[in-house]
Image 1 (spheres, helix red, strand yellow):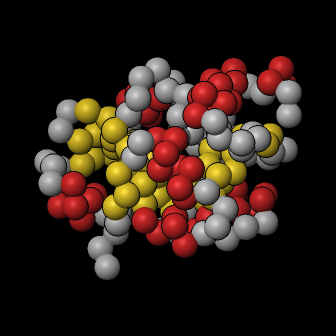
Image 2 (cartoon, helix red, strand yellow):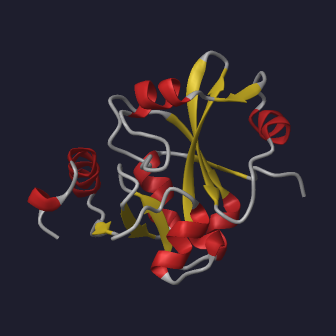
Amino acid sequence: MTDDILPARSRAVAEALAEAGLPGEIRVLPDSARTAAEAAAALGCEVGAIANSLVFVCDGAPLLVMTSGAHRVDTAHLARELGTGPITRATAAQVREATGQAIGGVAPVGHPAPLRTVVDTALADHALLWAAAGHPHTVVPMTYEDLLKLTGGTASTVTAP
C-alpha cells in the first residue's frame, strides 16, 4: 500500500514499523475495526489473534496493554504481576494525549513518545497477530515476537488463571 492513501496517523505507524525493520504492510479495511470482533470478522481470523491496544493509567503514567481480543484485562491481576499501584482505564482524552490516536485505532507504535507497554502472553498462541495501525480502518500483521520487539514491551499474563 502506498503511504499517500493511508490516514496521517497510520503513516506515523508505517514509519515506526519501517524504522524497526518490520515487514508488516498496513491494510486499510472498508469498514471500521474498532472492536476485536469487528477486526476478526473483517480479517477472517480468530478474535484471539487481534492484538487490542488498551491504554490505562498506572502510577501516574500511561500504560499500553497489548492484549488478546479474546479476553478482558484484569487490572488488579496485572498490577500484582507488575508490582505497581492500581491500574485504571484511561479516558478518551488521556488515550489521545498519550498516543496521538483515537480509541479503536490505537497502534502499538507511532505515539508522540514511547509508552511503557505490556504484551499479553496469550497472544503467543497465534502465529499471526493483527494490531490496529493508528486509525479504526487500518490494521497491520505481525508475530508475537515482532510485537515484543516493536514495543519493547514486557510479556505478562493480563488475566488471572
